[in-house]
Amino acid sequence: MDAFADRPFTGNSAAVVLLTEPRGDDWMQQVAEELKHAATAFVTPDDHLRWFTPEREVELCGHATLATAHVLGGEREFTTRSGVLTCKNDDGWVHMDLPADPPELTDPPIGLAEALPHATIKATARGRTDLLVELASAEEVRSARPDLSALARIPSRGVVITAAGDGEADIVSRCFYPAAGIGEDPVTGSAHCTLAPYWVPRLQRADLLAEQASPRGGFLRATLAQDRVRLSGRAVTVLHGRLNT
Figure 1: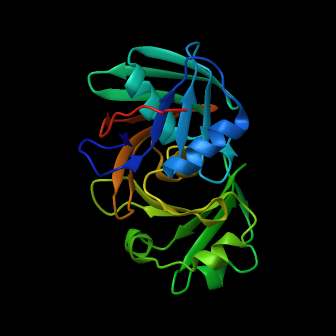
Figure 2 (figure 1 turned 180 degrees about the horizontal axis):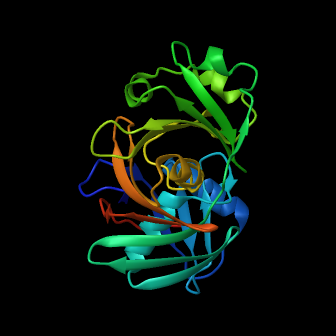
Figure 3 (figure 1 turned 45 degrees about the horizontal axis):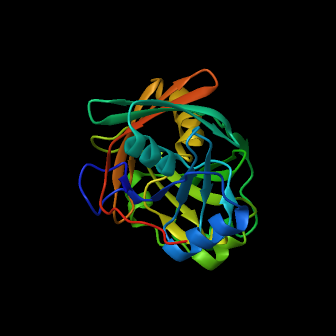
């Protein structure tokens, strides 16, 4: 599956494994490692949903949730380690209701400037999982060449660089998770649970068109409503297969 995409080979790829019964953690981790997608979703017939990278299980993965909802269709209530996540398919779009992760402003951690050479850091804020770094312009976000080894030493799940948009999009971001075995993530739904609460008060608008400026690229819509974020995007099915295990 390609999530947050309207055509193949864009957005963020994910595998969706439709289980007939619950399977063990070790088996799911081995499957995720074998498939080598940024995330593999495992969903049971009663809509219990878990996500694994090739390295580990994660508590929330937006693009793999969107991919799963697209495969199953209709309206779903997934039981996850991040609570119940509601997804609705509507005219080619998937709308997801996810928990907001408001970041708190913080001093730049040691090593951040070295990890982002030539970048103008305006502010840093830390959510529950990611470090958000606001840069001076959308162009700085697009042209950034971070030192991934240095980023991996930053104490957080990942580092999200962002700026106000300079065109169609309200905000621009890129997301890096080298500590989890992912250099740059193409499009990251869960990061927008932190980006939306950060940018909504600064831009004075509750609905944001967000661009993730990775090489594959992707757009999504993010709406902040109190302690929830509604993310909307499209997905396309690229490949069907069967696990012989």
